[in-house]
Length: 390
Ligand code: GLA
Figure 1: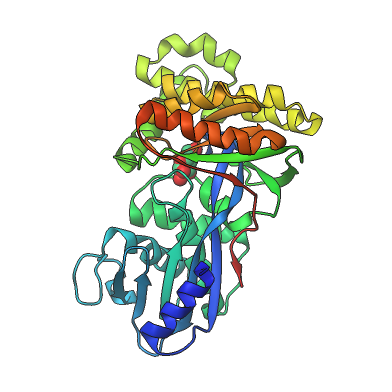
Figure 2: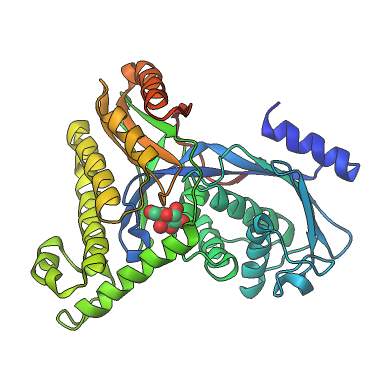
């Protein structure tokens, strides 16, 4: 059964009628520009062919009642209990419910209608895997409330509302990349976003290249704390550097050359974090003409350097991710490999010659299992459309 069918059937069973609507909102994979979105940099993600599916109807009570099939859990909340982050009975909302409730909160803050809904949802974006399962949930609910609320916002505006929910309700100080990719994805296209101006375009990936996602099966630990600390280090770097470089607003405003001249003014840890960011922004800018020229060898080298930098400077890798990347980089047909997303567990992204992608996937699975004893999940992914009403 597809998730479309499952959520529909379960809705019918739970609420005794067919759902009025179904939305689908994808996860994302990021090729380059990691941990730069909250530094006003450039990112190069794609929406993937794994998604959250939500079957829903409006409710005739004031309660929004949601069933999360993957967790076999259910919650109900009302606009009145939202700011206290409690369910309708006054108990604290479970962690997973903060995402839909946060979206309702952000939409209300923006003055947008959020009629009570009943919904059943499920996802095949693995949680804690670096593929933005939370953004896909947020974008599914933003679109659901747009459908019931009778208002219209652009995909980018809905992405910003989802980011607001995550920053101010869930408490993760994330950037805009994940919600953007989930909302704005296009079939078979990469997305290129300037996280300062929010201007974006789509780019083709050459036909003879495959994006292979490799899941270490290690789920992220301690993320929000470590993630928020990385962000604070970047802000600290800007604060110190602006004494000598007045007018800089973020690390985006500091070139690698300028950074090198001032690096010694920063405490060691802050210097490493900021160096990753300024060099990664440069890598993501350099990647665009390489894509146009089809220079996958050089493009892949940028991915490899990105991984080394995330491992050594930004320190967001874990041994299993490093193993997955090392094995991949030694295999035929692999242009480049690196961890994707926030890090601390989850998946790697691999750019592979399409005709070798099957052999690569098999060899990568075998090599990783031999080194770690864990059996990974590896799949060739295609870029998909963003959140949509089906
Ligand atoms: C998470 C955040 C994004 C981005 C990435 C790292 O996925 O949600 O905003 O910062 O980490 O690039």
